[in-house]
Length: 201
Image 1 (spheres, one colour):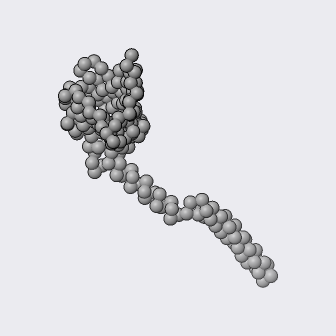
Image 2 (cartoon, one colour; image 1 turned 90 degrees about the horizontal axis):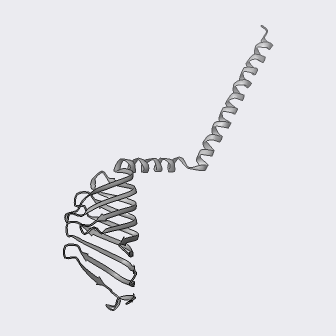
Image 3 (tube, one colour; image 1 turned 60 degrees about the vertical axis):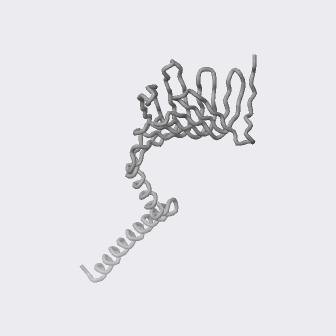
């Protein structure tokens, strides 16, 4: 093989390797730059750490149901479409899209619905929040918060309370039901007045 042919071969091989390197770095650079443009690597790592932290710190459940008896002997069923509890404190269950049914000893039934809720699986206390709706016999109650204390046998309804009944409509700031004594206290912070529209017929 002559020197001229050797030089040509070296030039051809060099050009071939150079062309491959150009193609490799061109496409590799585009892939990296497109990834960086969509979501930067730092942001990706932060999101990944956050998701890992959340999944490690929480137990997440779907379509859960609790049932049992309260201290007064009334049966209840509590359901939620989604719920989670922190691994550090598994007594408290945080819920979304909550539905509950209370079956009282006098054969009456109370239905309670809310967007959010909390359930203490040790004390059996419950909290309902955001768009709370309760149905009891022919009455409907609307509020933003309801707290049921199993240990103290009371139910507090507060924050924009409205009751619709066949006898009329009533607005109040807070209602306190004493389950043991079977009494109802109505509180209003508006000069002590309660707004009610009652049908006496």
